[in-house]
Amino acid sequence: MRVHFAVYARGLRRHSTYRAALIAGLITNSVFGAINAMVLLAVFAARPQINGYDATDAVTQVFVGQMLITVTMIVSAAPSLDLAERIRTGEVANDLLRPVSLQGWCLAQDLGRATFGFLFRGVPTFLIGVVLFGAVVPNEVAGALAFLVSVILAALVGFALRYLYSLCGFWMLDSRGVWVVAGLIGPVAAGMILPLPLFPPVIGEVLRLLPWASLVQIPAEILLGKESLPGGGVLGGLALQTLWAALLLGLGAWITATATRRVVIQGG
Amino acid sequence: MADTRHHVEVPDGERSGRVRHAATTLLRPFVDYRRLAWLWVRAFAQYRLSLILMSLAVMVSVLIQVGAVVILFGHAGTLAGFTVMEGLLVFGLAASAFGTADMFAGSVERLGNHIRSGTLDIMLIRPVSPLVQVAADEFSPRRLGKVVPALAVLGVALAGVDVEWSAAEVALLALMMLSGTLICAAIWVITGCLQFFIAGAREAANSLTYGGQALTEYPIAIYGQEIVRAVTYVVPLAFISWQPALLVLDRTDPLGMPEQLRYMGPAIAVLLCACAALTWRFGLRHYRSTGS
Image (cartoon, rainbow over all chains, first blue to last red; front, side):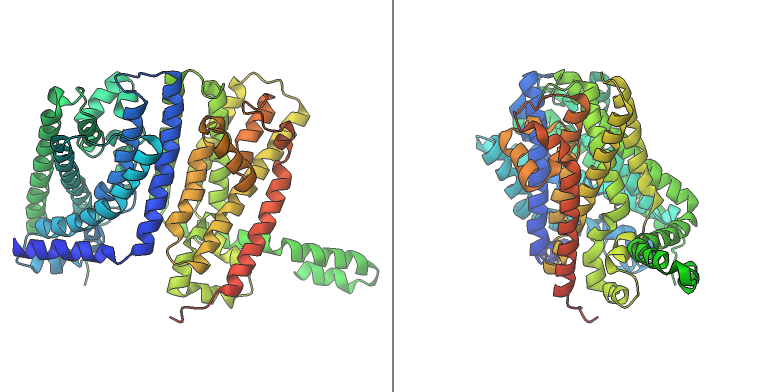
């Protein structure tokens, strides 16, 4: 555990070095958030209620999405985990020699990155949404805590998915194709492109059950306290996120074990 | 080149030879660009399956955006007085202009990498304009995956809107599309040049390039007067899709901006390209090698 904490702290510090990139990212997230919010505001001006969502809900979800970009790395179509490249080059052999599980090591490192991104890029982006567009903030401690837990679960699901994409590299030699496909499906299924309630109901309901919904849609609905969450409330939403996190991390651990037993690592 | 020399040697042809020489000098960057781009096309063609899959992926990403536009118009009915088809016209104009500009000049956004890794130094000692080299770097036909569906959407929208076409109008539309593309390319170069001065400006520049694309994919009147003014008079994004759409549809501006603006696209494009050329020169003068 101490090792993991040390790796977590290093991950956090590593990303705190790139201040210019931080500000640039903050600007980009805010600009895209503002554009998406304005488009949705125009739509809701024409029709104030769409499948239980109103303008404030939609705008809040847009900025939750922009806030969580750095936490879940949902929009990147390029590998956003070092592991992908390390598997391709064969450097992963060194990682496997460590007396720590590969997944635990990567998770600790990625959570460090996510923590830094959330605090210094995500939260400011969201505050811009609050100031400019009146995005909803939790008004009580319980709501804030539930949202925070949901964000942590989103980070876990986000990592677990990207870890699985990377593992494809053990068999495919290069996992970039998987990342490209994931970069297409992910943002749509997460409710990043449009909030899922705006989709035709059948498609929306299916997308809700997939793991990507845990990255943006469910955290946003938990913040908004929506009844459309699975089980009709905040606890149901958190339960679904926990389920996906556990399932995907478990799958990741199992595949890692299989891969290390069966696959011949490339590289010299 | 050989052809020109031949012409100069003919005594009577001295004047026409000079004209030819001027033409060659003027066309030189385009010829260089074509050669470099072709080189990259051949390189990428070695990985044919990967190229096809990547193109398909880009195509799907455009179609996803189209889907979002259709869904939103489906909920709202009309946005800024534009119907779905008219909205798709705006989308098609924006996406095709940005897609084409991205294809030809999008690589400029990797200027920072060239500076960091020192490859810009290598480009500077070659007898080809460094801007041409940076823009043609890694020219990939997969970016057609962006242009083709955008043009298809534009075609569907043009067939679906209520406009009577004459040869003059078709020519006017083509001119406006060319202007829009040049404006996008100029914005790409200008924002790329920021990397001469600020390392890591790439992502911030994206908020103008990709952000500009996202902004102009919808009828911009929905963003309100201030933003429309800003993207008309400060960063002329309005001339990429909004003003051309007003021109094609022969619609009065819902925000009451001057009617003449819709004919200004070509002039703005020329002006902005001149700005881009000057910015590039200024940036290159300012450039100091990283020495690595």
